[in-house]
Image (tube, rainbow, N blue to C red):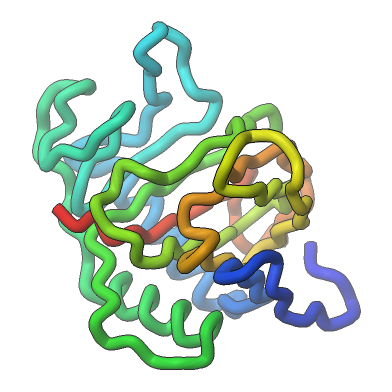
Amino acid sequence: MSSLLPREPVVVAPGAVHVPEWLDPERQRDVVQACREWAQGPVPMRHTRMPNGTQMSVQTVCLGWHWMPYRYSRTADDVGGAPVAPFPSWLAGLGRDAVETAYGERDESYEPDAALINFYDSTAKMGMHQDKEEQSSAPVVSLSIGDSCLFRFGNTESRGRPWTDVRLESGDLFVFGGPSRFAYHGVMKTFSGTADSALGLNGRLNITLRVTGL
């Protein structure tokens, strides 16, 4: 649940900006409803299986392009081969608004064409990784809804230090581009029970918007 005191935007690293409480409660509820529909779409939400046979603890559903380790496809080749759900235009507009908020300048050429929607229960984590399957260096837009988490934002060279730990709460925006576009990052912990009960969400949703360049 959000702090009683306003939280201010923070530049975590060059090109990486955290904007607290960017989505108001009504917009958060709308996005949760959309995610529920996407999770029941042509390619349902699932635990992605890694090449070594292990399963990711988060559950994922994709829009526009289907992500699998470590590539994109228009069809979910790792889970039955169904066509991925389309990427809605309103979500692209939300991405442009997010980039404008983070960087203070409107970029109408920013056209995200893929979304990864990850659901974290109380035990789910995400190890330090780079988002590098895209053939574009356009910023990644990340939206958090539901339970808070401990988000670790690192450097572009390795999974080790230096890094910055950020608590992401429901409605928060995090954008990383420019020098930080390929920084390692991960989710160390999800704080169960911190979501507003009005969301009807037991866990955390993270929606990331990307430009694939494909």
